[in-house]
Image 1: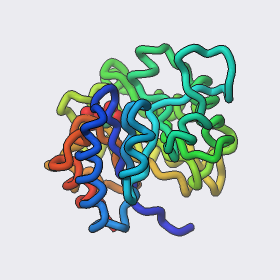
Image 2 (image 1 turned 90 degrees about the horizontal axis):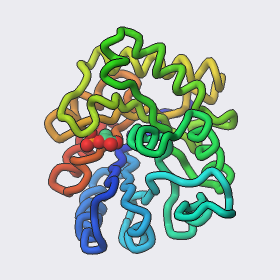
Image 3 (image 1 turned 135 degrees about the horizontal axis):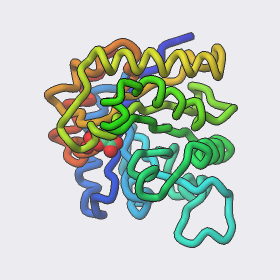
Length: 248
Ligand code: PEP
């Protein structure tokens, strides 16, 4: 199975305005020098359509989608609506949504399946809390979370997994490389156990306080297929060096 390119995706969360298309354009221009990297930005949904027209090779994604195709779900957006606006994929199961909106593993699997049905990609997030890390059972907890969140049709053609320790998100704290390597190896084993051969082709990104200073080391860890980046993706000055750090 051919190795997929590194995948570097920025999650802008609830940040940004239409004027920040200038940031996207700076990222898109710099990304041209790194055609071996799959680069993405997930702005707030209100910016997807405006950004899609200026994205160059940067793939625009959404930060969530509803599992249903249509219906009485006030305030929500379906996969097809996001696709029509210009999103090629969406993040599902981010820990902030699991915590703030009470999303369950089953909800996350249904959202990922809805994206696949619409012909879109998905980045499925999993990760342990600090309490769970300190319990010594992080690997068992996160692999179980992945197994329960994984749609049956998953394959590397449309699905990526992001390992994001909750305690590393926005905190400046990052697990030691050996712990990232051990978690990614365990997630790979779970993917292969659940999906067979298709599980070998799913990229596993690391997310949590990735910045220009630590990106080279993190992206060189075995089976780290890229990074999901929050804070450092909001400015071209901090996001572009992370794209440049991605191995070929
Ligand atoms: C995230 O929220 O997905 C994330 C990785 O954030 P940060 O890079 O800011 O830790």
